[in-house]
Image (cartoon, rainbow, N blue to C red; front, side, top):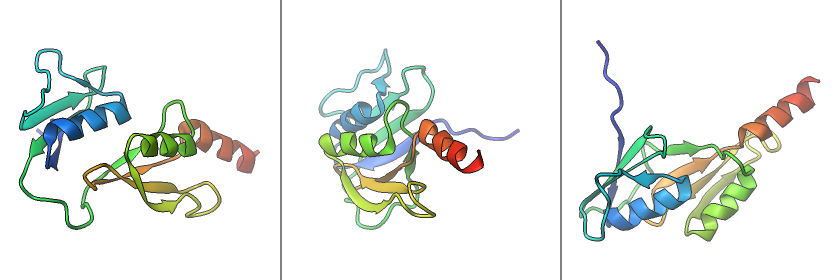
Length: 137
């Protein structure tokens, strides 16, 4: 038998605040029977369908080097550029714009959350399909 990933854990200086920020960015929510409150040292959020979960845990350590593991996010309804703008509007910062890496409009944008944890925003599936249709047809 193999293992499965129960949830992804993120160390945080303030688990509550960082979980609230990621809930806003991803559209995730608290578990119905385990709401997150200010001062909680562990805050678990999940996709609305009960799928993927992220656990934020208070740690005294601050982030000091590049993440060895990060999220690659693909927008549902917006374009990559619109998603990047949305993330910036709620407090993310751009670390590196690689949106033309491997060719025009093909790459990604490296972002950082309010505590400096990196994540990438990829093109939406609609953008990927539009590129394929334009180059294969």
